[in-house]
Structures are given as structure tokens and as C-alpha cells.
Length: 337
Ligand SMILES: Cc1cc2nc3c(=O)[nH]c(=O)nc-3n(C[C@H](O)[C@H](O)[C@H](O)COP(=O)(O)O)c2cc1C
Image (tube, rainbow, N blue to C red; front, side, top):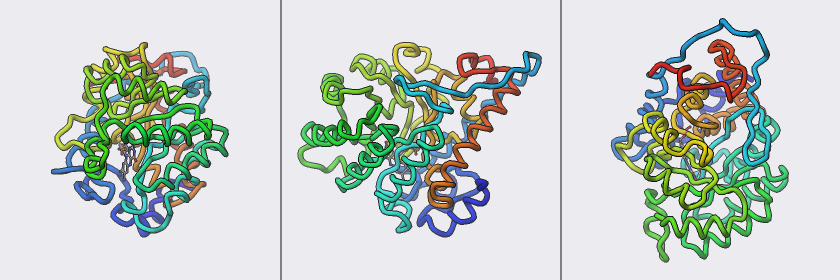
């Protein structure tokens, strides 16, 4: 199943999302609910556009070895350095085709079968986390539940589900502090101090990933909190209008914390060449959200698996054309800024 075939089906069953041939944030712009961005709505567009401005330096004068795209994170081996991103409240944003449970079932299972892993979302409906962790358990822990920054008592409850799922890691999208539904909760949810994050890592009892880092200062605080990985992310423009793009901040964040913590990045990454660019700028791996949703709506499990394979093949091709044979060989001089 090709991505073109996937969008043919998806465009008629995704609510606010038009399943555009290029998912660049332009048509959905500031539609929230929907897959758009906050305020003026140009942050998701900027995420996408900045990857396009960065170009790849071709070099095929090298040995003609096979390319190895395999990737290890926290002792687990994956086929590619690619994760499907967490997307919560799919019925609100994408209409009725899938319940939260059905969406997570498709995503987690098909990503595990494709040799990658899915992050799952969280929401006010407790069944979202229950469904996600149940499916992750069925896939022998291959999936990353992403817990919202609730108050500490709710976090403890959610972490019990995470522990039961045997998930190989757990994430928290600290930038969800910018989502309206979290802001208005009692007791208060949202921003977390370094000490609170240390406590959450302690409760988590497994590798802890902090999602939503956009500054060197934030990355250093994540290191101080004992996090095992960060995701350089602006939540696809959905939490703060007028952020820079993730491609703009990734190099300085990598210069500051690379080697101390694993670095993932998301935001507008849409194909294998973008993945190569992100790794060249200092990421260990990438997270892709909106287009995996389209793959699930347009092609179900087969759609997700074929999209993952397509991204992997594109990455392999780009690596061949830039003269690198493994992820370790990818260095910043592969890109032209
Ligand atoms: C409709 C929608 C819902 C999302 N829900 C979540 C969520 O529950 N948790 C989370 O950490 N990120 C959530 N995100 C953010 C994505 O995981 C990701 O950070 C962002 O979309 C950027 O990646 P992309 O450009 O590949 O979509 C959501 C994004 C969208 C569009």
C-alpha cells in the first residue's frame, strides 16, 4: 500500500484533517480542535518549512557496503530510528472513525510489527491510558505511554498502569502545560519543577523521556532531573504560538547535552531525508505524529506498516547517497544549512 493510496482513503474519513498529499500545517493552520496549531497557527508550518531549507550533501565516493539503519534505545533494538508520536483525543480531532482504544490498538501493534515503536497519548478520559497500556503489554512492552503532567496523585495512578504494561520507557509531555484543558484542573496540573520531575522519574521506575524541550536551558534542566531522553518538540505548534521550529533549536540543544541524555526530535519530519537531516543535526532518533495518524486512518495496520517501511527505505537511500553506512557515521557535515 503506497502513501498515495493511504491518503485517497484517509481524506474522506478524518474530520478536520484533509489528509493533504504534503502534511505541512497549511490547510489545518489554526484549527483546534483538529490537527492544526495554536494562535496564528504558523508554528507547525515553520517546523515543516525549516527541514526543507536544510539540504543534504551528496557523496558517493565511498565503499559500496549495505546501509544499516538499526537503532538501539534503552537496550531495545529497532529497525529504524523512528517512532510514531503520541496523539490523544483522536475522536475530538479526527472524527468518529476510531475510538481512542481502536486507534491505539492499530498504532501500537503495527509499529511493533514494523520494527519500530509507538508513543501513545493521554487525555481526560482515563480509558485512553488504560487502552494504550493494555496494548503495549500485549506487544511485550514495545511502546511508550506518554503521561500528561497531571498533579502527582494522578501521575502515581497512571504510572501503575505503565508499570503493569512493562513499557520499555515512559514519557511526559511537560509542554502540555499549554493545553487549555490541563490549565483549568483542580488540583493544578501543568508545569513541573526539576525536583518534581526527579520524583516522577523515581515513581516511573524505567527510562524516563521528557517531551517538549525547546531551549538549552530546558534541556539542561531535564538532565538535572535525571531524565534518560528528551524530545525536542513544540507539540507541533499546539501549545505556544510563535515558537521557533524544532530544526532551528536542535543543533544548540545537541551541542549542550549530547552524550548526557538521548535526544529525539519531532515537528514536521515527513520523510527519510528529514530523518537524516535531524540525525546530522544531533538527534539520536525522530518522532513523527500527524502522518502516522493519516496512515492509520487511510490504511489501518497495513497503512502504518507500509508507511514505516517507506520512511525506512527513504532513510536508507538518503544515507547511501550521502556516503554513510550506519547511524553512527552520520555527522553534521552531511547537511548544508
Ligand atoms: C491532534 C493532535 C493530538 C496530539 N496529542 C498529543 C498527546 O496527547 N501527547 C503528546 O505528547 N503530544 C501530542 N501531540 C503532539 C505530537 O505528538 C507531536 O509532538 C506534534 O504533532 C509534532 O509532530 P508532527 O509534526 O510530526 O505532527 C498531538 C498532536 C496532534 C496534531
